[in-house]
Length: 199
Ligand SMILES: Cc1cc2nc3c(=O)[nH]c(=O)nc-3n(C[C@H](O)[C@H](O)[C@H](O)COP(=O)(O)O)c2cc1C
Image (cartoon, rainbow, N blue to C red):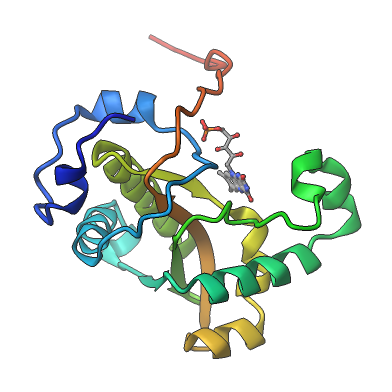
């Protein structure tokens, strides 16, 4: 993705210029990252974009964790790999089964979207916030990828405690973030299956 470095580090949350449609079609799950760390002001801008998402009953149930400690990311990745069920393991591509595989693809930033348990539609709210965040990241020249494989580990009492997350919070969306390394090929979609259109 050829967004200039200046945009990535500007801290001006309105700086990127990409139409919503361009961001929707350009966003890809990025699994290869350059080593530089995403700056705090950029992450702040992305979180601000995330919370513009629609939210049921205006509940805004989300809360975020940002992890940029490489040792911690590796530890969470190791726990995530241990929590993969045999059924899931069978369905995973071979690269994910390699012993040194990092579920975060060595990205330097993980953003986890949590919500308090018991809030109606909290999961939907978190996913809408996640898509806002990923589209905004794309518009800023950053790559992202949802890492569902990490959810089970993140929701253990041990990891909540270690990260300082309250026990009544549920992790719904882990997203890695970084400057993409190389091009990410697009993954084609089926045509929308239109079942009914009554006029
Ligand atoms: C709920 C969910 C969980 C996902 N978990 C992972 C994951 O653990 N690891 C991964 O590499 N990609 C994960 N992905 C990314 C999907 O593989 C990806 O979105 C899909 O293949 C389509 O590719 P695209 O995002 O580039 O269009 C996840 C996506 C979603 C929506």
